[in-house]
Image 1 (spheres, helix red, strand yellow):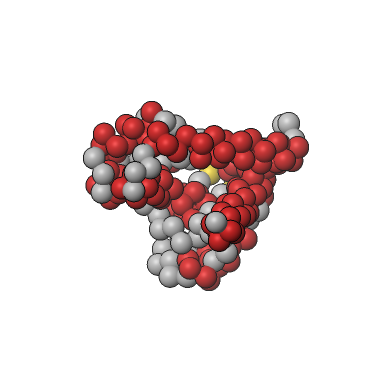
Image 2 (cartoon, rainbow, N blue to C red):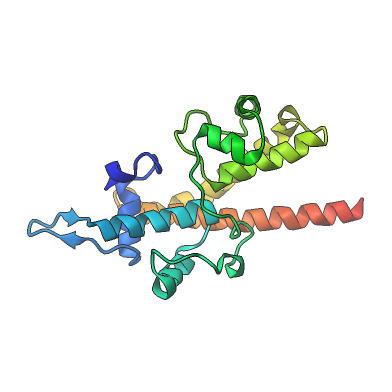
Length: 209
C-alpha cells in the first residue's frame, strides 16, 4: 500500500494507515495470518481521504460523512459548505512545469520561492496548497512584495507549526501507531483553527489602520 501511494504521499507511514483503519475510514481484509490485504477499492478510498486532508483540510468526521453520502467516485460539489478556511481548495496534482503554468509564473519564480523557504524543494508533484502559495506570492509580487519580503511570514508560520506540534505531541504515544495518526490529525485541525484566527486578527488590524 505504501509503495503504491509513495509518489503522491511521500510521508505516508504505517501509523497513518492504522489510525485511519481504527477510525473506520478504511477496512482492509485480513489474511489467515493476520496481515492486512488491500484491494483496489481500499487504495482508491485511502487516496480520497489523504487528498481531502492535504488539499481541503477536511477533518476526518467530514470525510467520513462525505464518503457515506457520495462515495469515492462522486464529484465533490459541497466543498464550500464544509467547515474551515481552506475548505474551498480544489484537489490538484501538478508537476513543476504544471505548477508554474497554473499559477501564471515563470519557473524562475518557483526557484526564488524555494530560496526564501516559501516552497519546498524537490517534490515530484505539487498539490493545491503549493498552488495557493505560488498564486498568492505572485499577486504580492505584482504589488512590489517579492519573496524576499515575505520571510517574516514564513518565520511566523514556522513558529506556529512548532507550537501546534508541541501541543499535539503528547497525544502520540510511543509504540501506538493509531495514536500517532490521531496526533497528526489533531495537529491538522489545530492548524485550521490557527489559520482562521490569523485571518480574523489580520482583518481587525487592517480596520484599525
